[in-house]
Image 1: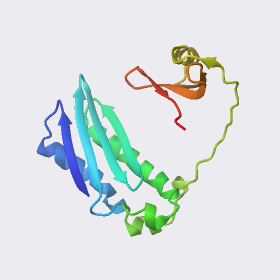
Image 2: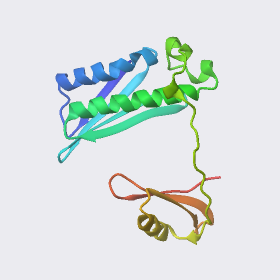
Image 3: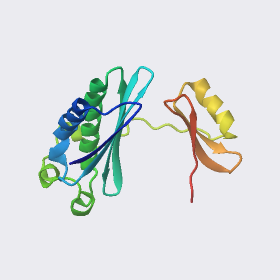
Image 4: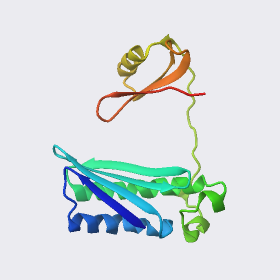
Length: 176
């Protein structure tokens, strides 16, 4: 794999570079040698953040983790990426086209119990009430959820507001 490692508010030392290549290098068996891995390290106050992005044909495998120690963050993000790869494998429909970034050995490997299909265990129905995005954020906070689906009174479309890690809000509106 080819690594692009950058640092924001942190110098990428040879020790950090080696740790990243050792940990993320464990994922080598899943990918072709020319697969690109983009790693961004950053420090904010006492948080050591790592973000790993691996573009694969038509999709992006991405994980972000933070802790008080960069080496712990590297360990945690590697585990997340590996879980995502195993889930993604079960979704490959056209193995020859969609799996160009993955190694033949990984594609032909038998699925394990951890690679199970996604199962929906609960379905919830509710009335979608017209409201503006600010009111939807308030409703989301009152319910204690991370997201809220509503009928946007400004656009007459079903929209979603969500809470971001930085305690700010995002709005998703469909485009037809």
